[in-house]
Image (tube, rainbow, N blue to C red; front, side, top):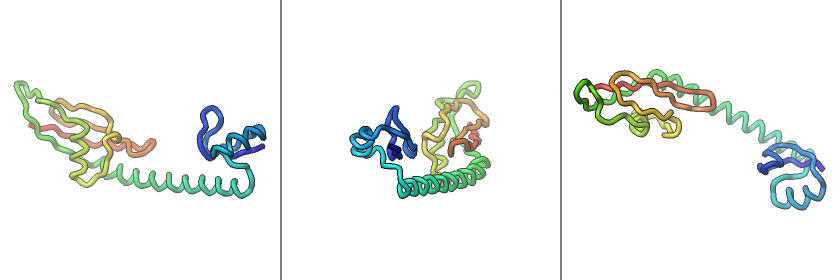
Length: 145
């Protein structure tokens, strides 16, 4: 019997996958526990509709990420820090501080999106922000005394 998985099941199938399994296993476990449905025209149509919808959502997210990338690539964030002998910086600039500065400028960036980096020297530093799968924006962080 052919079934369409509607949930991931470890070592059996992923969501959206069509697989041929034994009738008893399909009826008594997969369908009964909500992991799969019987493959028929109606269920295949639902699957195709969900795939198209997900592709459209991915395209929208990608467009938003690309427009955000062009804005962020131009951003320069300045931090004024105290320094000691030989311009040694006291402390460092954290991811949390970078996130807070971006929020002040109107960007909604999650802390997890900012590549972990600790900035402890004066000057310009590049910080990468992962916006979407393969879309990475780079902002400049300027540390001054």
